[in-house]
Length: 186
Ligand SMILES: O=P(O)(O)OC[C@H]1O[C@H](OP(=O)(O)OP(=O)(O)O)[C@H](O)[C@@H]1O
Image 1: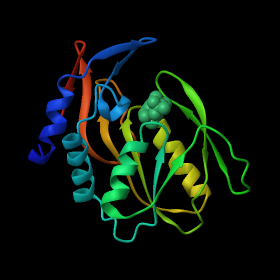
Image 2 (image 1 turned 60 degrees about the horizontal axis):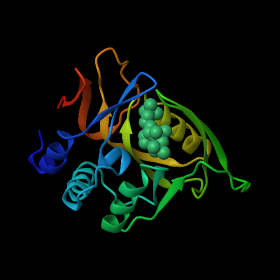
Image 3 (image 1 turned 180 degrees about the vertical axis):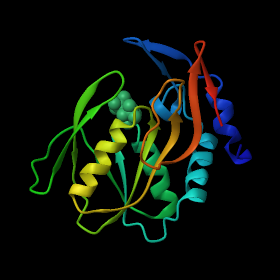
């Protein structure tokens, strides 16, 4: 495991698990902003993503609300790349792309704005679970004729029996819930 991720690994050990309609959901600063996100954890995340992704020719970081926002903000400050948020409200702009999102515990509508055809983009989110959110955003970016440089999440959920997500996704750690506890798989 990447030793530079130690602050993130340490913080994950304390993550409580809550039941969301039968879905074992872990609560962490990355995914929920609670318990408090320590700056050294966010630093480790930004450094880890920058080691794995070349932001040199990236025009825009794209992150869904809500829990992609703090990662996109921190990355933007370090890389100088601007970011846009995929919002859960429509603005009615002519080029807006509507996105339907379904997670393991709910569904909602997203709206992509602020990305022009040909823009080189990196998608960033907190966690990939079913992959439906990332897939829907990638398809919206393809519809907007953006160039997808990379897709990144801090954590991938790789619980037993979970089908593997087909798209290549840069990630820092794989995690799962076993016997009511969050475990780091690699
Ligand atoms: O891989 P998936 O199954 O699609 O799940 C991952 C998505 O679920 C969470 O968002 P959520 O819908 O809970 O909204 P939030 O970011 O506003 O908390 C998380 O922030 C990811 O965007």
